[in-house]
Image 1 (cartoon, rainbow, N blue to C red):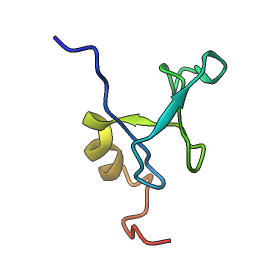
Image 2 (cartoon, rainbow, N blue to C red; image 1 turned 90 degrees about the vertical axis):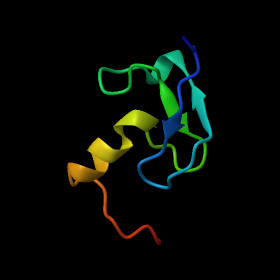
Image 3 (cartoon, rainbow, N blue to C red; image 1 turned 90 degrees about the horizontal axis):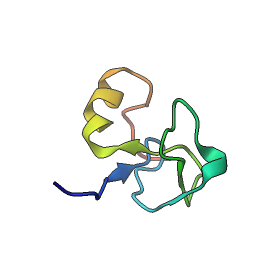
Image 4 (cartoon, one colour; image 1 turned 180 degrees about the horizontal axis):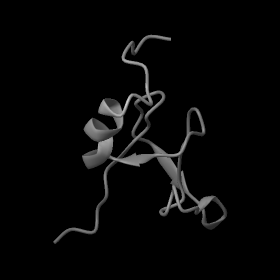
Amino acid sequence: MTNHIHFRCPCCHGSQYRTSSFDVTEGNPFGAKCIFCKSKMITFDNVAMYIQSGQTPLDFRK
């Protein structure tokens, strides 16, 4: 078993993050935030489910 959790930003698709106990919420239990756009990070295994839910636009250009 590994203790490494892979996060992905749903907004900018970055994978660099910081964690803080002040950012821990029910929706963000690890307190991980993207260092680029400050969005809450989601675990990489939930990315496909997040995209299918329609909460993110499928055009990845800004």
